Length: 117
Image (tube, rainbow, N blue to C red; front, side):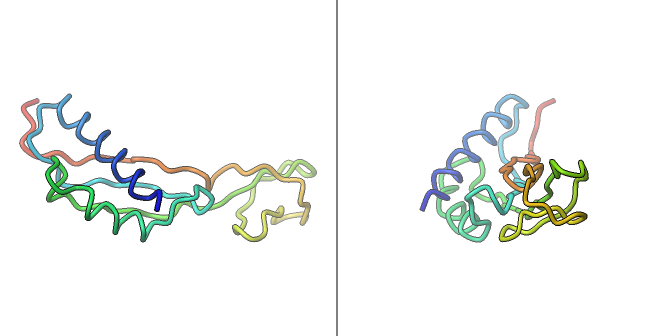
């Protein structure tokens, strides 16, 4: 399960942010997970619960949300929503599209406690 490696990387980055701001603890991490990122949000949450032990995130909640999928059509130039199984233009139906959103895995915010500045 590569979600464990992702959890460890998120924790490492969150701890770097906390130390840079003089925080002693982290209260919450917010993560945006694209359906095409290769990361399962539920598995990420489960692995995070194990990985956070003994870190500044030991008591921190992980909140994740799914990013929408959108594509830009090379035929008509429009950007429309799509599904993971049908990356077609929502306007003209063309399959000549480029994924615009849906592949991201983004640490959106780190909520700190006991920050000194």
